[in-house]
Image (cartoon, rainbow, N blue to C red):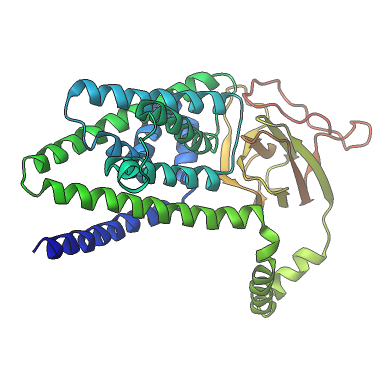
Length: 396
């Protein structure tokens, strides 16, 4: 009977583990926040950072699994507060420090270590060090603080994908971190209720085995998935062949449909302009377009995705009004515009990476370049001085 019970427990543990893996797999490669979040935060201020921090923690299954492991066998409020506070201090230190100093690590590698941290806490819960390794476990408080530091780097990689403000950077980081803690407290309250309910049941011992073996299995597979992603980012040459084959198929598919756009590509661009966006900085580039004038353009950054706002400002306006035509976070963009008003039209780019990013902008149409020497360009319409929150490119 004992054998059958143990067998049932292990099978149940594997099943629960696979369920947890299903949840992990939904976010295993979801490194970064949605475009909607990135755009909304531009206008939402620090309350938006706080909201995103809370929702990110509540959807961060790896972080929640680690917290779940920490509090699993704790029964007193003092112990729960002590260990959760240790984890909070650990991830807060690296979240603030790494983001403020623009320290970016490979997110696949960080998440792989976070997966191992889930395995560690569950292994400690089943007394695996004594039972399987015949050694005393490391100091739990020290390990929770140390692993919290790793989790903080993971949170920082997410935060640095947002368009952070240089003027209020620290406040942005603190707001995001406050949101993280609010989300953690909310999830923690639900976990404690569930565990308390199970603890009163005669099946709690079985539940504890199922939960912790499931966490070990889930954390191990999360580690393997993230290491697979890391291999793609650190050894891209190993995957070039398949990528090229895919591109060739796509090219063959497009050959019959691209006749219309062939003239657009072969007709040549009027201007090819190189622009450098400094690390953790921003820049604007503008053309002057008369009402009804057209602009065709394409631009591409050298690898990094940038937040950009393609917009126009009416000539003579002093209120600060501008009209956005497109906002997004991408590494390239192309299209055309027919100006609905006379004035400056162009791009604002924001670089959140710790390295400069180079952009090649190609354009043609009925416009005047504002960066050329005045002696070489046609008479430029007189512009009324106006205040702007962006640094315009005056010379390249």
